Image (cartoon, rainbow, N blue to C red; front, side, top):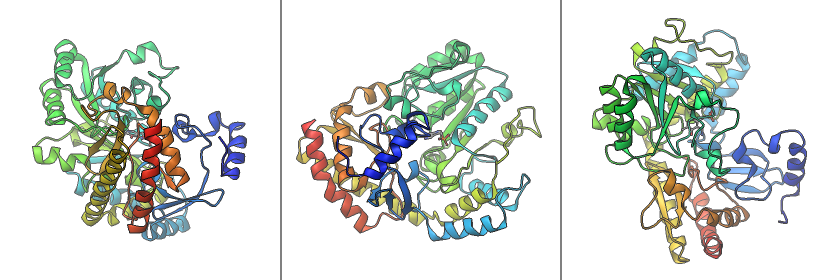
Length: 437
Ligand code: PMP
C-alpha cells in the first residue's frame, strides 16, 4: 500500500526496531486494518495532527478520556498550575480528596475510593479485594469483555485480543486461568448455572457496565440487575467495570443511567479514562465495608508510587468539573446524529449492518442486521472484513476511526458542526468501499 504519510512511515520503521510491533499498546499498530499507523504530534478540540502535518477529526478521543475534546483550556490551565508546583510528592495531596469527593457525589454507589494509575490496576485490585473480602477464589467474567491485561481476565477478552483473533494470552498459567469462569454475555441462565455449581467458591462477577470492547453491546433488559441479585444471593460481589463508560456515558456513568433507577448498586466499581482527563489515573470504589479491606486499614495489599499523582488529580478534577450535564446531553445528541448518518450511508450502498449502542457509545457491525450483536459469538461472526476498507477510506478523508471493528467510536464536546460535517461528508465513499469488500 503506498502511503501519503512518509514521516509516519519512517517513524514506524524506527519504532519497529525499538519496540515490539513498533507500539506500546497492540491495537495502535493497525494490525487488523493494515497500513502504517499514523504518528500523532498534537491534538486540539476534535482534531489530531500527525507527524506529516495532516489533520484528522478524531473519533478515538484517546480511547475515551477526551470527553471535553483535546487540550481543553481549563484542563490545561489546571495541569500547568499543578506542574508548576512539582510533578510528584510521594505523599498525600489535597486534590486526591477533591477528586474522590466529586466521584462520590456523582456516583452514590461509591462510599470510598482508591486512586491507581491504570484501568488494569483498578480491576486487578478489585478482583484481589473481592477474593480477600469473601475468602473465595473464583471470578466470573463474560466472553468479549475486556478488563485490562491482568492475567486472570485475559481469556476471551475482546479489545486487542479480538482484533488479533487471540483466544487468550500466552504466559498465563493454567492454574490462574482455571480460577476464571468465562460465560456468554447477556445470558443470566448461564450465570445461575455457574452459581448452582460453584456458588460457595465464587468471589465475584466482573462485567463491563456496558460492553464496548467487542464493539458495543447493549446489556439486555435486567441483565446487570440480575447479576446484582444473583451475586447478593450467593454472598459474592458484583464488580461493575466503568473504566470506559464511567463519566462518559453520563454524569454518573452507565450505572447512573440504568442501575440507579432500577434500584440496585454494584459492590465495587472501577473507573479510568475520563476520570483522569488524559492523564494516567484510574480508581476503584464502592461499599465502605469492602473498600476498608484495603491496606492500611485491612489485609488486602495495594500500593502505587504514582497513585494519586498531583498533576493527574488536577486534570481529573478539572475534567469532571467541566463535564456538566450539558456536556453529556451534547455528546448524546452528536452520537445519535453520527450513528444515523453512518447507518444511512451504509444503507445507501446496500451494506448490511447494525448500529450497536449503549448510551452515547456506539459501534458498527457488518452483516448483522437481522439479529444484532448480543454477545462475543455474534461479534466474531460478523463480516469484519468490511471494516478495513471503510476505515482507510475515512482516514484518507481526514477522519481517524478506531483501527478495529471491535472498538467503540468516541465523540466529545468539541465535535462541532464543522467536525461533524467533515465526518458525514466522508461517509459515502467509505460505505462504497465497505460494499466493495
Ligand atoms: N476495563 C475496560 C472496560 C476497558 O475498556 C479498559 C481499557 N480499554 C480497561 C479496563 C483497562 O484500562 P487500561 O488500559 O487503563 O489499563
